[in-house]
Image 1 (cartoon, rainbow, N blue to C red):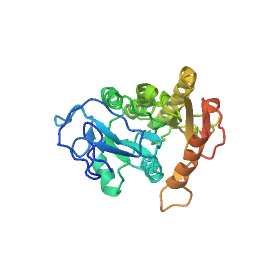
Image 2 (image 1 turned 30 degrees about the vertical axis):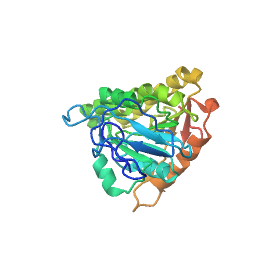
Image 3 (image 1 turned 90 degrees about the vertical axis):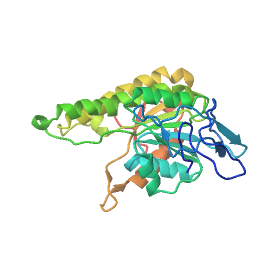
Length: 288
């Protein structure tokens, strides 16, 4: 794993050495190996952290080209699994999460993984990260961060939580996608994927309840569809992905590992003709 601060971390092998705290101006990540400046532990974009730094540079070492994948919400669950699977392929993974130290404590990542502290509801932090990564070609943007529940009945709906869900599940993916659209457009694969839920489908709603979660995901439907139209001229494929009913490791059913494997397969097959489509994790097209 490349530890990160203002720019995605420190490189301490391969014959390159740098001093901590070096502030430079450019960044490019589409490569097999990168020589990274700064010796801080994580890439911290929290505006309340007075120790956060603001600049840096990455040096390139010639190697095999690979995809660059940016994933939000990698603290646990599907986001964590996406990061692990893309990393195991050798892709360059930019895994954003609220607590990079906890994620790093659970896994030993290679030099192709950058752990970035990011609150997706902090628009200024999202824009700073996009500016820091200016010039980086992002092949796949996975908008995974979200609040998954609960799903109460009508009379138990929590209005405070509802507003928070709209901020995290609906507005934040729009902000992230808008900020990184240019990075995706400059890449080869050009995919923006929203981790969605069939609970946002009006057609498939046969059980009611869950007003907050359903409305946040139904709204995400419209964002995805409009963005697919607006980004179409730039050849970006924008899709929604329902991960299925994922269960814990000690339960019978669809595990995160299998769900992410199948969703990655859908992403790999996507192109301009698939943009604006809502998929089940197994590639089945779902109704709105």
